[in-house]
Amino acid sequence: MKDYWWQEAIIYQIYLRSFFDGNSDGIGDFKGLIKKLDYLDDLGVDALWVSPHYESPMDDNGYDVSDYYKVSKDYGTIEDVKEFIKEAHKRDIKVLFDLVLNHTSDEHKWFQAAKDPTHKDHEKYHDYYIWQSPKYDDEGNKKPPTQWRSWFGGGVWEYNEPTDEYYLHIFSKKMPDLNWRNASMKRDLKNITKWWIDLGVDGFRVDASNHLEKNWKFPEAHPGYEHFSSLPKHHDYLEEFGKELFIPNNILTIGESGGASQEEALQYAGFDSKEFDLLIQFGHCWADSDDSNKLTEGKWAKGHLYVKDIKNSFQRWNDMLKDKGWNLIYWHNHDQPRVISHYGDDNIYHNISGKMLCQSLYFMPGTPIIYQGEEIGMTNVDYKNLHNFRDVEVFTEYNNFKQNLTPEPIAMQALRDRARDNARTPMQWDNTIHAGFSDKTPWINVVGNYRQINVQKESQDTNSILNTYKKVIRLRKELNVAFGNLEFIDIDNDDSYIYKNELADKIILSISNFRGKHIGVNFDFDISGYSLLMSNYKAQVLAEKMLLKPYESLVYIKNKEV
Ligand code: GLC
Ligand code: CA
Image 1: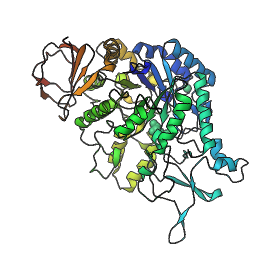
Image 2 (image 1 turned 60 degrees about the vertical axis):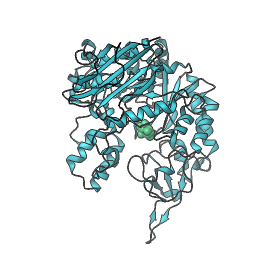
Image 3 (image 1 turned 30 degrees about the vertical axis):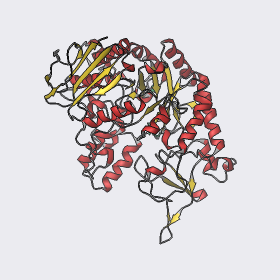
Image 4 (image 1 turned 180 degrees about the vertical axis):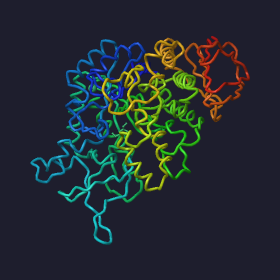
């Protein structure tokens, strides 16, 4: 068991654009974030992961960077950033920025030179990106080199007339992928990273980190994800950054990579790893996708929630990293729906299920990442029209739905259930206009339930979801919950979520019902000696057979016999 500050820390994710508007233009910014630092301090968080703040045309809300050395005008100035870091540090809160290394914006000066053969720097920058010559169909028309599918739903190739080539973009066409085999490009990215380290950041969340290497043979495939995801060489690139920049500067790094094996999990986030300290993976994030639904495919098809899949994923990651690395626990980030709408009930059991989701997850070992608004039970959107949505991914997928002849109500419901915008609406601070986020019309509409669900109201209500989060955060630290040993009980039961977390001197027993109906549970281990720590209904005494109410959650604790 190592001893790093981040093992007992609570990380909180800030989606800057939607957190708090400090200058009345309807967009969240650093000035606004600074004003809310006391709220975050009071909540008990130790580190903030802030979504990309660099200059950007905002095709993908800042994940499309046009200048890594500049702060987006939407978010403030470099002085604001320095002030933010200073104010956060004053409160003993660490600052983690989002590092986007897989692609730039097509408006970045590198790409401007790369795509234009007459540009004076064309020679140098062309190979910063990934280009291929066209293929031709039987009639002699140009066609893309492959049928690979972008993560946002269209093809991955965009034609560039001046060079008569296609460039690769695994996200939007305004986000060309960088060529990590180019040494000069890598050097430039290292300089950028060092520049932000020198400014005083404590860590980075490294975006899309398993996509850095591509299969340069460009074989035909559809969707072809295996040709631009998790290829072995991306580990070399990450290790290079780790050895040269992150480790010597004592920088916390959180990688992002879906679907890693045990070997890879340790490669990324083992204590001996030179790549990252922690890893975000998505094993538990889509436990309710319906593969048989062809109207809205993949993540867009909501089906039965397999609670057992959530548990098995958490247990698997826990076991893979056990003693050899460190695990993260989180429900979701800015790319998935709101957890209360997704795995809980955002309607009649809003309060009860919001607390259940808190108590079920955050008594597990590991380091939590709480996503902004989760602590008050913010919900998915209530939008009626396509034009209420903002995310670039929504529009490419909506076209796919139309091509599949998906009926309009089903397409719109898929967006309300699954779109990334669900997690990106303005933080609900109070019951005044625009939820107190801004006094101007926000860049994306607030959810209509802000009058009932907001920070101000929940702060005053001892029975609120917010106060449950505060209490759990405090207890995590008091009890050293992070360092325990996790063991799910009846892991393949598809309704209950029950585990023991064995600490040095105590055992926590967390029992939750993930369904909106009563369920029976029984225990065949020694249940003596436990006392109730938390509940979301009236207290229940622990018994061998129990009936759990809808979304009921009970946490018990006992001293270990010595
Ligand atoms: C990551 C980000 C996501 C973004 C994508 C491209 O998955 O979390 O929001 O769209 O990378 O940068
Ligand atoms: Ca603003």
